[in-house]
Image (cartoon, rainbow, N blue to C red; front, side, top):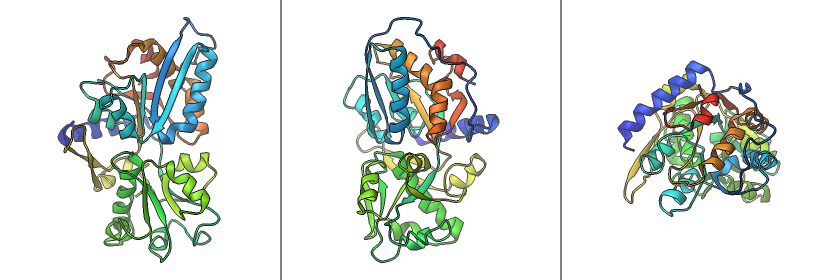
Length: 331
């Protein structure tokens, strides 16, 4: 998807979020997930998802199997771009794609592999650390960027080409320059001696816990799920406030596109998760039933409990293309 089309999508989705006041919504879906399946389902369902969704979606899968015990779920977490490319480039069969950035679905999957997405959750950026982190006893929301530049301090981020948390980290650095008046901050942090990069954000957790990293840029949900200390970043840079969408849009990061040599320009915007069913998936009844668990009361409760507020009712860019069984969960 070209940048111009993506830029047209962003204000549409943000206006929907603002209109429904769902960015920090914790409400319950209107329709309850049924306690008994209406039909007998069996087979294998592949769920490819963002690494930051590993914990809540494991619970969703467990609830799904209570309803449909004859369905074998194969779940695999990775950076969202990598997750999508398993379908679009490696031709793997997949029933569910759940991305930490909804925009990657149209950017990388339209029109050949999908023609709709559903927005179902939000999140925000933070800086994680442990009790053993250098200067962990003094780091806060006002001085974190200064501490990261101290000699011997190490900090981690994920790969922007593979994981939305990676390019969102670079956006945080860009926005921090403006918010704190710290000219050149991005360039001072990027590629510095203490700067370490891994494929996806959850890969950094083990490095934090082992002491190989002092700090890591993560989502607050990941910090909560792994009981990590974290610096709560100001709204101006945490990519969580829809009213600051214009300020966020000042940050841009180039990442690899769908084709070799293609470049996508990611524009700063509030963090919004999206999900779809690949159009070439042959067992759509399995995937639709899974989405009913995710979007119903059980799934939205799981997301809330894991620090990733659910968007209820969920939002979509193409309701006519969404399976009719899911319409009751949509705005």
